[in-house]
Length: 233
Image 1: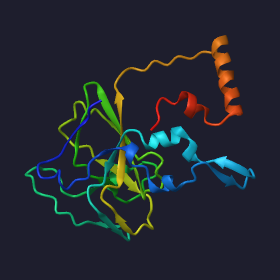
Image 2 (image 1 turned 30 degrees about the horizontal axis):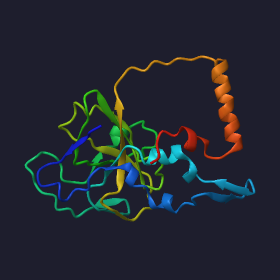
Image 3 (image 1 turned 90 degrees about the vertical axis):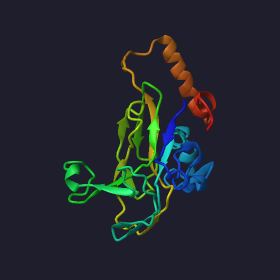
């Protein structure tokens, strides 16, 4: 699938670009024990989530959208020094905006009376006909001091407008710099098509296949990764 990104004139040289998530795993995952860790509860060596392909594949699938510029955070106040060019467009030049507190009225997790921040995205996204994109918080990234809301945008049609990323700031103790390039959202293309749900009990063949998988899980490690995973990342 070809996905096209475009920015305003004069911005390409200064903007971090969206990237394939496969090349941007966080340092803490890289530093995590590769094979096993000692469990006090079980009094045994166990595999960490680094050995769980679905966990890791969620983090390295799709596209990461980066923070446009360094943002300083001090005592809950945000500031930045970013000499973004004036292109004549009505598009903001601020890397972060806000939503009024009232816009989050009744939303669980949104602090009452506080602004909802908005990470401004300076890239348009164009998908092939019939495809939308799910935007959400970067997968398995509770280390980030914010939580991005999820949304689905029909980017085959909304290809001339920007998609911005509202989020709640979750770490009131954070003081420091959120560097340019920090992933603020992750996107997955999804095809727009009707879904049909079917339910049934396993027939004899399906039951036999299920028992084969269960037996394999008890006999050896890495069954899903070695036998069922569609591709290595």
